[in-house]
Length: 263
Ligand code: 6PG
Image 1 (cartoon, rainbow, N blue to C red):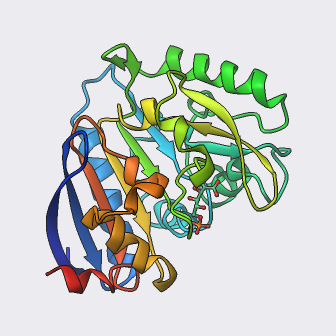
Image 2 (cartoon, rainbow, N blue to C red; image 1 turned 120 degrees about the vertical axis):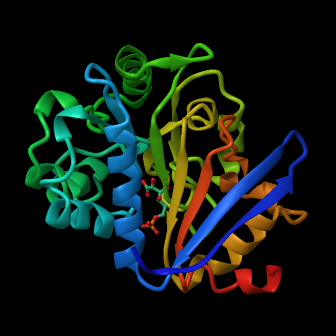
């Protein structure tokens, strides 16, 4: 497999712990998507016959290219019956809304691969947010094996917004990294749109967390957060520190363009 530009790890001493962020950058999204697809296939193939692979999808637009790529190139290679799909967050809208993270993932991936309907656990954006945050926490608790008394996703894919938010944890709701719940209600500051979001407790209990980030507009933030520079603690994405230590940033060359200064 080709496509790596730079492959390095940064060990950053945050206030509480030493976190090694592995960073892989790719010339284009094609090699990036292939790398992630092969990582998922490898992890699924390691499962015993009665185990499932719990995958928490990111919302937003960035991962849609990856979802389409999986459907187009990997439909025959992935044991879809082994994959359980969850979401890191959902907008509080109807599932057929163009704002829905579920709809976006359904149209680009789920409708185009033979994943059993029972393996897809969508967050009901149309429901009462407080009720659904509680309800979905229970759904995840019942369908994802626990580690240290908390469900442990095999893989959580995250994006990052231009303000450093991740999932739907925004700079004004960093407290959700200290929540004891699994999912909570939040809101997008610029519009007030209600969201249901995974909390830091569940994010950081994941076996593996991958930030999938592309584009120049996020390059500065990526550099600040991965370097752990003073002041980066105001960005929610900087609180993603899985206890497993397996945090991987998959970047295209544009999103990685400011990392050069760190060499
Ligand atoms: C959402 C996402 C959110 C997203 C970032 C990046 O529901 O919007 O969960 O955290 O990952 O906002 O969004 P883009 O990929 O569209 O830039």
